[in-house]
Image (cartoon, rainbow, N blue to C red; front, side):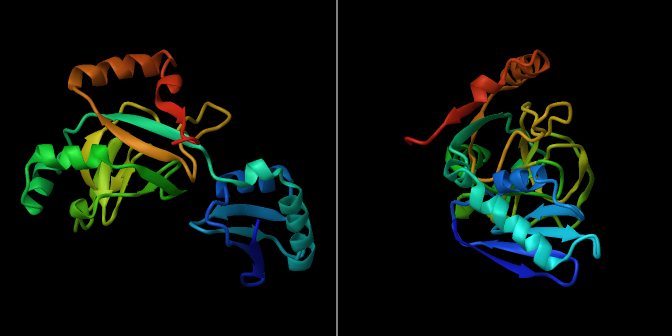
Length: 236
């Protein structure tokens, strides 16, 4: 694994990951499990990890040595990105769907077909607990965020913001263009692994009917859904 360590101010250290297939979330998990003294937060980015610490409980040189020890002893298999494909059944009935069709001078059905036929990659999680920034949006669907964000976007809402698509894991204010909703929970606060998605996952959206949406809600309530939406894509 290729990386660079550098100080960020006097109370943070940044790990710049030079491998495009680095499993940032897994690395963060190992760093957290290392119980690094003085560390107050570990923040993943698109290609970096920033570790914030308290001085003089620890300092850059002490922390650097411990971080290198963790990185160098990580199993090789855990340094790579996820090999998972996550399928998100989606009811395309969002309040901005018709406006997007008008903006791009096409039919609603064309928007749905393009969005649901693309393969996306989770670049990072952020903004909200488990919110995935998904790259792979067809260029013809790129749309600026709303000029005035909504005060509340329901959990499960699927949206487009600029050249990315994403899913709101919890109720929240937001300015993405809403085109649909998925019944699959992305934030699982009562489980050991609280986030459905992780950096490196591939994601596809599957268009479903309102009746199918209700059926999926029933599966979720019975915790009988994960095996139907999570697959291995290593041999794709």
